[in-house]
Length: 122
Image (tube, rainbow, N blue to C red; front, side, top):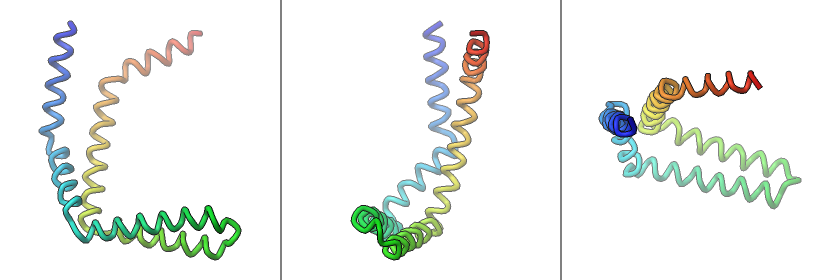
């Protein structure tokens, strides 16, 4: 029985690795990691986030500074999110996430329903 389960798990793993959604996500991840525009936008977002955290920490009573830092962070995050490659990656990521949720639901549905039934009997 355990060997059968291991074999089925291996088949599932191989099927997931060959799934076009996974392949696309992996390809887009490599493209993002090597795209200078995305690296610059990501860096600007990271700097804006660090600045925002510093402003909140050191100027917690200065709402004007906090709002300015928050606006800068929102703008930098927006600029990163609207980059075509990032948009494409996020769409592919969502597809993979949904696939994993479906796999999880199919594999573990029986355990969740059984667990709920056990809780209701107590």
